[in-house]
Amino acid sequence: MSFIKKCPKCNSINVVEDKKRGEIVCRDCGLVISEGSVDTGQEWREFSYEDSSEKRRAGAPVTFTKHDSGTGTKIGSGSDVYALPTSQKRKMLRLKKWHSRSSTALERNLKYAIIELKKAASILNIPQAIEEESARIYNLAVRNGLVRGRSMEAVVVGCIYIAARRYGLARSFNEICKEMHIDRKELGKTYRFIARELNIKVLPSGPEDYIPKFASALGFSAKTQTKAQDILKRAKSVGLTSGRGPTGLAAAVLYVASLITGEKRTQRAIAEVVNVTEVTIRNRYKEILEKLDLEEELKEPVKKLEEEDKTEILLE
Image 1 (cartoon, one colour):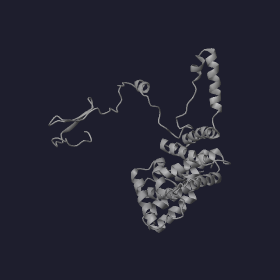
Image 2 (cartoon, rainbow, N blue to C red):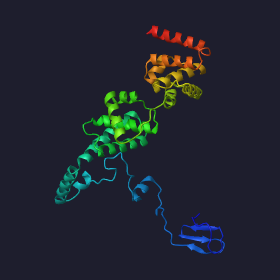
Image 3 (cartoon, rainbow, N blue to C red):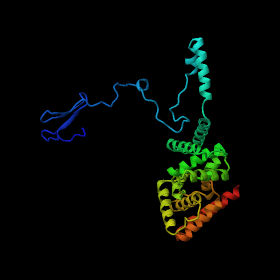
Image 4 (cartoon, rainbow, N blue to C red):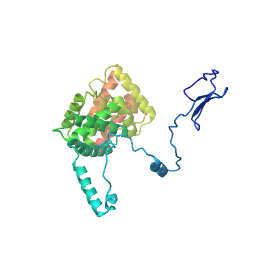
């Protein structure tokens, strides 16, 4: 249906658009209200991916994950150039060489940085949207002169961390440092500097961001995950989350939830997945039991599980 709702002659709402003729017609009185409209659809039919790619006249969309945003030009490929006559071939090869040499320092920096960014994105297994946002942040940083005197790897990983935090992706700072084999202090200074200079607000991650990820890695059911979220809400209401590390608190909440639902995991098993120490989990879960009055409810399960933990340590 067209944006024209009524016929100007008979005030009928029985108005239709004939896309084949490019006309808008009133079905009641036959008045041609508008004609000669432009068809914005494609003028060909396609039956396969090859037909689509051959007939389409538009290229790929603009993206920050390419150093030239996907709009750059290149003077021929090897086979195209070498198919020319000798005189033309020499001319094209010379033009190709000077074309590659004429790139600016900014373009060269972006070219190498995007390669590093794609490599880091692959290692960290981040979604395409966050990779695009990371490339956009790096582009802004390099154009504002924020990368000078800093490690390219630290800046790239810092941009990825900022983008991950903005999208709420559950990737802890320690996890990224470990996966990328980068110094924690250097990365911290770099990402904070970039965020401050570009006026980007990086909100701190909360334990609720990590519960689904850790629950999936530990093989917990939806029941345990829901119970963990419920315990976390209660912990927040009594101010137990203030000043505690989000990953350690998420691990402890899952540990307590597993005791309630019967899907028991040892502290060591959880600590290995979450990448925190057993002492951290033990301290957090004791605080949860005391502040939320769960000690009596979990007296027997806790005692039994603590005995299992001790047995496991003795066996080693």
